[in-house]
Length: 334
Image 1 (spheres, helix red, strand yellow):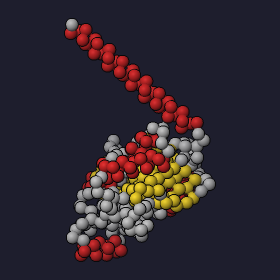
Image 2 (cartoon, one colour):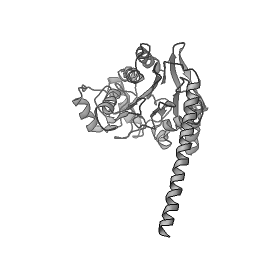
Image 3 (tube, rainbow, N blue to C red):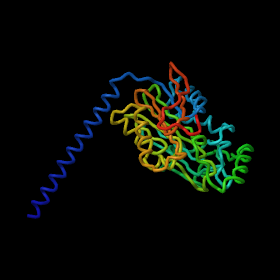
Image 4 (cartoon, one colour):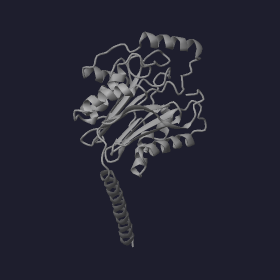
């Protein structure tokens, strides 16, 4: 009797495995068929906010010469990391409430290889450190002192990232803030970039100094694979900007890619992810989140909770800054 029950159990499990395998195979085949049936617009690069224009130009120098999407993703955002006039990425980024600039970044290629750093101090290009984590270690993420030690061992130079302008703004904030972090639609200027190269491969990057005047040690979505960035070379890629906590709660970028896997356009997938965030939060005050997405065919889209989010797009026929569609009108009027 016992052996008969075991046989039935094993047979049932085996049948379920076959059905699951068949369903997955059918889904994958249908997805691949739909991806290859359309002509690809390539190369193409898309990135968040108006500083994405300069980032795209650097990425395009790689892509236009037949270079790899991964190199474009890294080189593009390095421009933003080095801009002292930018207040939320790299050099000149807004500090935490203790006056320390801490950086988060991640990068991901078409093979699902990825690397990330979080709570990294005194290193100008966290995106390049993240790539080194991906290529030179067995890990995905390094944080804090360990990330800095690794960066220095890899030859990165230490430098002060707090500029005079950022320092003055922080000192002013200390007098008026009662130590509350600044959370509004204006300061979420994470640079996220997605690229599709001539070879038909996708890669992406995401880098930030995080929420202005955050608690010491706070890390948002930007270095977290699946939240701030996700790439699936069969389907597409997505990245996020905005309140990191809200993005993490719904695995934002990964869910955008999954919506595209289920047949949605990049635009509709971004909207669906935003709708999910809106549905999951009772209080939407100051909760700005924006997504950009790029599918395997080179089609791009974006969407945000509030108005005011824009993104830069560049391919062989166009180069423009586009205002994303949104759910709610920003009470600030833009």
